[in-house]
Length: 120
Image 1 (cartoon, one colour):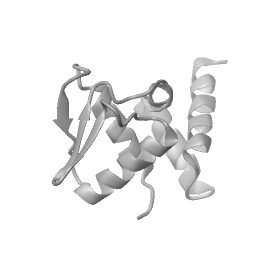
Image 2 (cartoon, rainbow, N blue to C red):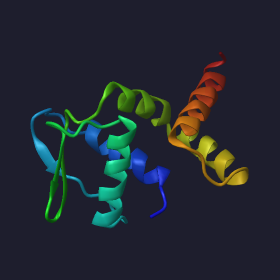
Image 3 (cartoon, rainbow, N blue to C red):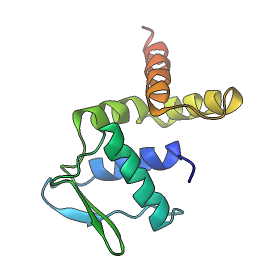
């Protein structure tokens, strides 16, 4: 399965939107299969953007996730990716040049575009 950066961003936005760190909610993202969601949650766990213990539960019918699942690294990535304008500029640049990049490269690109936007 191919990594989908749009889905990664949507998952992190979903987690951030859960206002209770101890309440689990079923993770559903419109337009994505439960298999794709499962795979991308695993990527986020591997990358250290989500924590499994107390944050993610894999069930027979999908993924349940709590508001406490996101790590410091996950918050940093999401802060860089939050703006729709900055996100679109970064994704357009990736699409127009290499087609795909690692999460770390995308984060660096998002930060660079954010700095330019702020005049830094």
